[in-house]
Image (cartoon, rainbow, N blue to C red; front, side, top):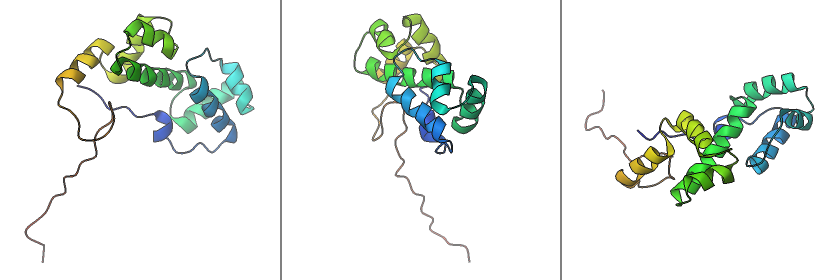
Length: 147
């Protein structure tokens, strides 16, 4: 039941707008801190409304959703490393553990506790990182070729 979630920035094509790239860079460096739309919009050189529209079009998520996913991804790493959930929530920029749990469940489909239990019970992956699928080495070989 563990779902694979990669960084939205990694999935999205490189944003065409230099302003959005500046905002993304700022978010990726400061996602554990309080971030404000008007500051991000100013970095991008856009009004708040236009910034949200352009960001969503280029990144595939609203700025708020993008920040939440970055925080959840970071908190997941802390949890896997054995950091208590309440501490991981605060370090990742959430208000408290329930705030983390709500967003964690929206991203991964399970609560942090269940995620960790399933992680312990699941067989080890050959390659890849936690939450990311291993690359398959299976290559089908056919014994007959079409004529």
